[in-house]
Length: 418
Image 1 (cartoon, rainbow, N blue to C red):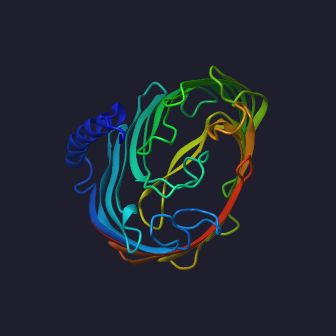
Image 2: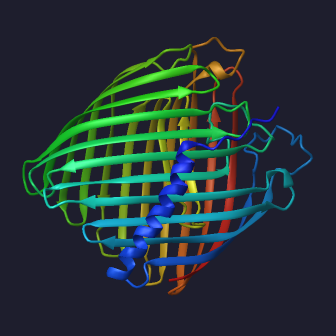
Image 3: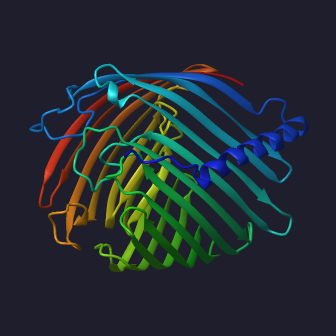
C-alpha cells in the first residue's frame, strides 16, 4: 500500500508564514523600497551517466537506461525587505522535471526558504527561519539503503529560531532551537524527525578573537524503526578574524550519543569542526572545512544550488559518526563571469541494522568523494546562465558491499523581473 501523504506542520507553517511575510514586506516596501520583489522563470538541461546510482555490474531492471538526459522548467520568486530594525525575506521555486528515457523518475520539485530577522535598541536580536523542500532522492540522500530502481521523493522541512543578547559588545549570550523532519515516498526508506536546542556565551578577548562555550542537545526519532537517540554536546569555540580577507572558526566538543532502540548509533568522545577562509585578492577566494560529528542526523542542511536555483538537501542519516573534508575556490574572472570549484570527501560510519541479514548494532563504512567545476555568466541584469561538471564516487562496505560512480553535466538559465 503506498504511503499516505500527510500535511506536515512545518509545511503548513511555511505557507502561513509566507503569506504573513508577504503582507509585512508590502508594508515595508511602501516605507523603504518601491520594489523589493523578484519573479522569474528558469530552465535547465542535464545529462547523468548513472541516474539510479547503481554499480556497473547491476542491470537496470525497470527497462530504462543507466544514463539519461533530463530537463526542467519552473518559476522562481521572492522578496527581501528591511523595515526599521527588522528584515523580512522569502525565496521560493517550483519546477517540473522530466527524463527522456526513465519516465518513472519524472517529478515535481519545490523549495521555500523564508524568515524574519529582528533587533531591538537593547542589544537583543534574533530571527525565525522556515524551509520546506521536495526533490527526487538519490542514494546518497538516504545512505543506508541498497540501490533501488523505484522513484523515491524526499520532503524536508525545518523550523529554526535564535536569539542573542549583546550585539557589538564584548559579551554575547545566545540561544537557539530547531525542528526538522525528513520524509520519503518509499516505505523502505527511513523517515526521521529531530529537535535540537542550544545555549551558550562568547566573549571577545581581543580585536580579532572571540572565545565561546555552550551546551547543545538533540533528540532524533525514526518513524518506521521505532528508534530514538539523544545527543548531549559540550562545545568550546573560537573565531579568529586574522585579517579582513582571512579567518578561522573552530569548535571542539565532547559528545555523548545514546540510543533507546536497537540501533548502533551510540557514541561518546570528541567531535568538532575547523573552517578557514582566505581571499588573497578581491577576485579570488578559498575555503576549507574539516568536521567530525556524531548523531543519526549528524548532517542536515539545505543548500541553494547555484546552477539551477533549486534547493538541494544533504543528509547523513542513521550514522554513528560523519567525518567530512571540503575544499572550495571561487574566481571572479570579470564583473559578469565567475568560476567555482570544489571537492569533498565524506566518511560515514553507518548503523548496519537496515540490512536485515546483519546483526543489529553492526556498522559499516560509507565513503563518498565528489568534485565539481562550474561557471556562471550574468548576461544582463535580469538574465543569467550557469553550467557545471560534477563527478561522484561512492564505496559502501558491509555484508552486501557495493560501489558506483557518476558523471553529470548541466546548464541552466534564469530570467527574473525585479
